[in-house]
Image 1 (cartoon, one colour):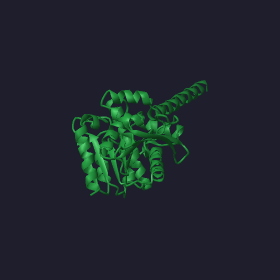
Image 2 (cartoon, rainbow, N blue to C red; image 1 turned 135 degrees about the horizontal axis):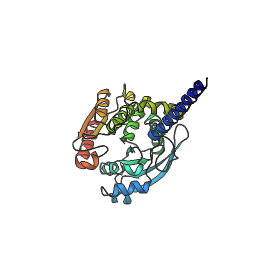
Image 3 (cartoon, rainbow, N blue to C red; image 1 turned 90 degrees about the horizontal axis):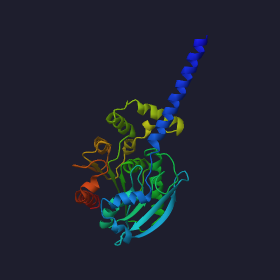
Image 4 (cartoon, one colour; image 1 turned 60 degrees about the horizontal axis):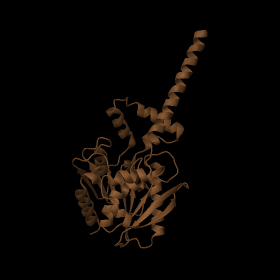
Length: 300
């Protein structure tokens, strides 16, 4: 009897350790350390000329999302403003400053840019990331707010990088009133990204399932349901997919699969020599020309 009691106690201890580990792993996956705006500006300024940003007329404001969560946004008004707008979504752990490299391109193309901090990032209240689920709803709220806030809209587009791209694609399930989407190095589902990451790190791939269990227990969201690609079914908004050909973090296959799933007009461009979220910095002229040509085609 004594040995049975000891065995039960050991089993309970192991169960508690396993539960604690799964909760910790979920937190590790969904609450990465975020950059401050100053840290992001330093990083950007070391890699390209950000001086254009200082001379632009800008307006700061907040947007209340579907659940009352407050998103901090900034409008950068194009000097030659003609009613064209683009909402730019940054990547995981970054903030609105990370979108400047794309804003520079859009300003040159005549677009005023709406930069904002994704949920849990930048100046927003700290919270966990759902890899597109809540973030896609936030973008839908931003689109609605933009339509109400600016009465001179001639064109409204979306541009996203990495998590921002995945969230942008996810937002399409809400049938947003936008004219185009540019999705740079987004993931089709977070499950394949995590499994590839653990595999490359030499860690057991089943840890993704452990993290998924912890995510459902701690945050009430399943990692396996974070699938932006499912939001593409039946959607006909023109989409430009861009991906670094040498991206080993989010494999180019993610964009390839999403391009195949897109019903309407789409393009897929792989930037040779570019790693994850490096396409614009690696080949800015090529990148700019790809976007310019895409916009010219869909707005003929």
